[in-house]
Length: 161
Image 1 (cartoon, one colour):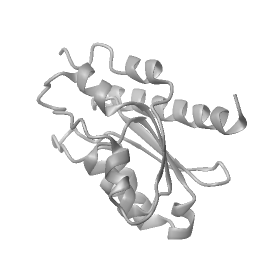
Image 2 (cartoon, rainbow, N blue to C red):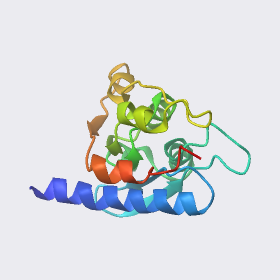
Image 3 (cartoon, rainbow, N blue to C red):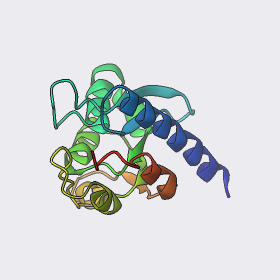
Image 4 (cartoon, rainbow, N blue to C red):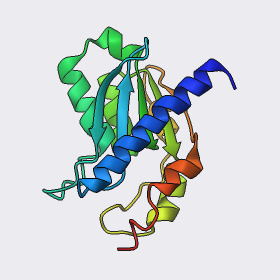
């Protein structure tokens, strides 16, 4: 395993910890972190569905909004967003518009759809983020799924309630 992969796994597991924390706060088990080129964690966000039942308050969308308000575009172009699950189409669009240059995710959207089923709080869009990014005018590097079994375990028993 090369250094980049070990680094990616390290930060991806930090996003899993944020997802677990989100669950303890009464939200869905999704989390992400944004890391600069030097390996410094800049932002971490949990899913924000509750208390308002805001279906747009995905962790990645919230992170994209926060980085736009607080970080320079040059920093964002070299930053990586690590997400416990593949960014949905909405979140991929937000990541693109924020100018984040790289995404690493755990659980694929396709597999997430199988995990959540047709749960009314997560009617998963089975649209790979790579397709959303490919339609843009600047490249966004994508790595994933990575550590998918660990990422899937975050959802054990959550969507059957």
